[in-house]
Image (tube, one colour):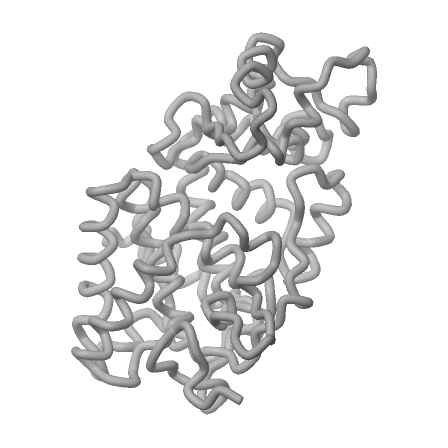
Length: 322
């Protein structure tokens, strides 16, 4: 790592929010020194067989950290009539849980009851981004796993949220407007189901205020209307240019009115966000550096450390389920 990059991380970690706690880079250096390499090897092997998994694995960290903090509560299975976060509508299309299971099984064989599921989620997301061409960054670890997973707690920002409401979802967990613009850049990977943007494909006068209903490129709109016709379950790439590469193409598409989700496209039209979208569209390196920083910051939301929580033996169930 270069001296400049070391200085960046040193300055950044000194400014992390108070909830960052005792997390540190290399937390498992003594207790499970092969932990990060085991995780990376599994992610690399699984992505070599299915490139679309990069988006799915990255998405797991967003869904986990935005609900009760980064505590792997997302991974708990519903049981005995009690619905966990997995039972929420927002979790319906999540996948990659089997990758987490495979990693956890390998880590338990290497160093039992040592590496938390919450840390696995953070490291898997980092490795998925890096293997898709995105930034490679250090992830502070030392999180512990939560003891609660309740479907009622799932309240995530939605694809059709107005800008102010979307921003409130981010500020409620300690993130800023800049963080929101940057983290939504994760949509450079992955797909959206037609049902999440079908309202944008309906014919209309096209004279609504831009912030309320940002327009879509008419050629893309016609293409998607035909593609999605009577089938909400079909999926379209959120980045129409390089959907399997983690880069700034997503922002370039937004400026061309080719954003699929309404909230994404609003970024290019709202006065508070357009300038940064334009900067990211022009400078891939700035986007990648800021995305790494935002992911580390998001990964610090309401973490459990020390003696709080537990280290699950199986990421799908609490160690002592009630």
